[in-house]
Length: 316
Image 1 (cartoon, rainbow, N blue to C red):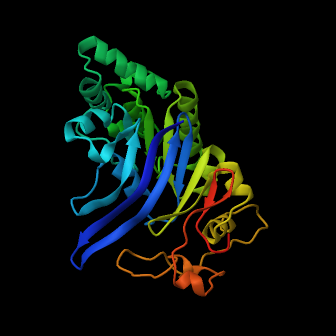
Image 2: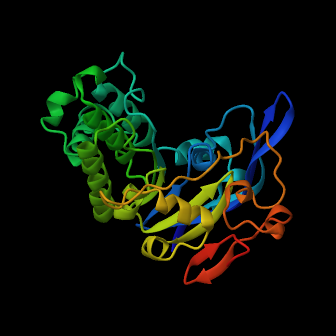
């Protein structure tokens, strides 16, 4: 059962040169208790797609079409007051950079208590106990004492755990994890992802994972949607995606992974287009080794190529 559905989302930005579209008919769904990963190169539209769900967008951004359905309700038609109750309490965000996401002037405990008081309407000892419980749930030792610590007294991994604790404090149904392992070493990355998986299994929380790290996705995600230049070009169950990728961009991304010490790394020639570039046809065609005439003239649609597997390519 889908707890969240993004349907034909279109978004653009008002620039000095006029309105430029950044997202084109983006569609994906998030199943209850599952992890769905949005992957692709930097600038492809992953984060702005996720931020559209909570409508945490720059002033220059404008959603021009589409629906975002959460538990049967279209969030794009929800009042600001109702949306405030959903943010944090029902859909929580784990932001991209743990090093800058906490306010250095306040203790970790004060920042966690603020979240709990707003969304859980708890006060005094009840709020404090809930905060300690949240820190313990993300395996922070001596949680009651750590409530008094400032962010600079936490390591990078502990800061990320504290941010996850804030997201979990209100028992959200969905966690949006935007590059949750950024700036962390490999060992801590694994610990954070294992923690998210444990929380997911224990609470049946749904996770939308935003990342460019396919290795991370392969070990953790249930479903994958690949984005390129503002479009979803392939979506599939994770096992199916890694065993049978269908879009040339997906194949190229997988070939760039270091499979073993003796394998030669392959690269994708060129750069992803900016929103200022007008490209007719498939937006990947300038970099695609399989490009034919129709690719430069028409936009391919997502076609069913297997069980819950869709790809937008004329070679399907």
